[in-house]
Image (tube, rainbow, N blue to C red; front, side, top):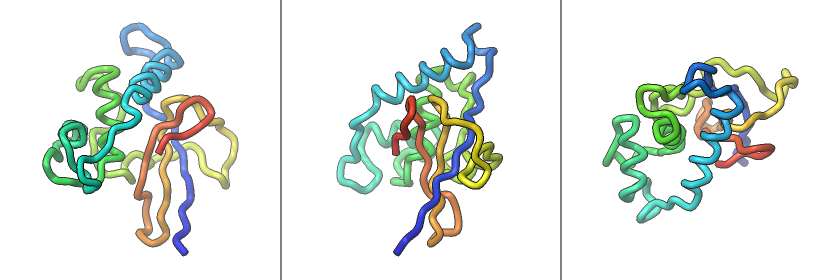
Length: 140
């Protein structure tokens, strides 16, 4: 049986983007991500035109690499622009949780829109999947 643990961290959103507050920025990220719900791989093998566009946001177009982390970067690019995107520009999911501010053991910080969550896979010994939190729930 494979066991996975959910770890969360607060996204790198700042008050400096276009004069908007952090909460407004978070809602823009969620809105952009919602618009992408339903994206599917062409053959179920990390491929297809939109998946390639998402992977291109981290320099992995055409590689058929897993694209969960690239999706977060792509959403950030679409929301803020490539230059102002606050998320790490990487397709490596563990990077998104390099400095977690919340996990089950610590408790405390509630989930907020546009937070990134990671799922730890014991079989891989690392975070192997990331996604964005919507209001009160996570999208994987």
